[in-house]
Image (cartoon, rainbow over all chains, first blue to last red; front, side, top):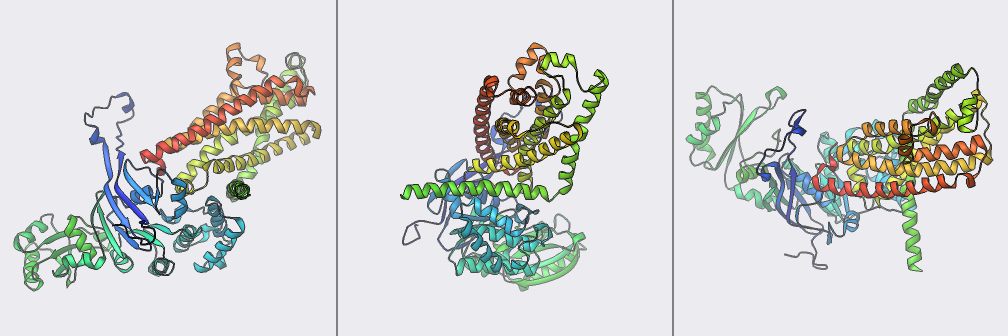
Length: 355
Length: 284
């Protein structure tokens, strides 16, 4: 299992990583006077990470995919020593996160929480100089490195303006520059393109690709954008309810449903039982999943059918929807994506907006 | 040779952290210039009413009964010294906890805690920046006092006074670390710092001589670093004494400083560990 030929060390390795959080119960104004009635302590705990096993090779761009609350950010916070795991062993760059904390921290650069995690009242240069000091960089070296990074991020012209005057995308670039300041071998990127316009998102993706391919950095990328993971990642792990459900290359994962055909129908105001109704009409379909949309926001609901023969399914589906007086927006027959793999494996959807 | 060079490098990198933390906080404060104006003007409103009240009670700027208790009949400098030293309590106690809470709220705390530097130096930088702003406010109060009330300040007196102010600040750093630790865990420190500020205000001789308090309150007041700082500074500035006259108070202040600093650093580390385990470190 050991990958790195020279050192025999994985960049990131988690063995049975487990993290639990106590559930906070609000018991009213005088709740503190009441005794805790719960007999079973396990009911008062949320298992955020449940025996997570990940092995990431040096130089690999590894995607961690899952819906909101699946455990992506908790994983990153455990790796970055912000949270202490309850169980399991975690090594980063060969260092144990609980025993060699300083070495782990020096090995990592991270982008977690996006643009809010900078000092908006300071300039980009001041922000970077502050964080350079936290990473024990020599002042002269830090100044040189900051200049380089600001040029790479195309922010040199506005380096001495306060971040409050920056756009979201520009602030995200500063956040990435901060992660690269001390030239760490490993990067933890938590939803780095979240909330960015397509142009900035593309620029950030290009930079991530370059960091991995040209600079040989190991990247752990969490995202719920399927296309992003598909385009960038060497391997992908699906995480759901704190458990890793699959790990492989995007192509191999897609191969799990590649031979199957996908029918995707966008519909308006579908009744709750439509999934069950279609499933009863298409017994050979492997997956029939209704993904609720937000029609007020212009996102109709979607029904995905994987398996069987699309040509045969289309007529049945249209008839079924007509019988229920459901308005059809569009109908597409295509190749399943990573999202479809995730749906097949977990029965859950990856995204809120269905991207 | 290698070891020496390494140690120097560690020292320099730690000083770099302290410097950048201080600069960051001061630059952030200067981004809101109205706060500086407020703090420069606010002290006038704080102590002038008490001076006017004193004038109304005793019919002048001197009081014989006040002289019997304190050794000096001039109550105006007495009140000014109380106001100036108490402003350190207000800004330092409130400042550190709020600074941590703000970092937690804006999401920068995670990055500070995930950096490889020793967090003690970050905390020292925070304390130093609060000290700088406190000293600016104190200087503005003293300047107002010199201009309006003709208070006499000489370098010979101000140097030992400044030394005592540093000792006071060390004790307050310890207390503010305790508050910052509570801020990490409970995400609020304002109410606690206000309460402590008021306790200091009542039990330390800020506005009145300590002798006017009941005996039990005087004993309680002896646990507060501000009490000793006020006694020593007033002794220097109003009675013209030197360290030999107040060595017990200086020693007591030093002991309280050490106890509070050790307790503060220990509690902060303990709370940091505890919140990392509970997962509440990133909450705000």
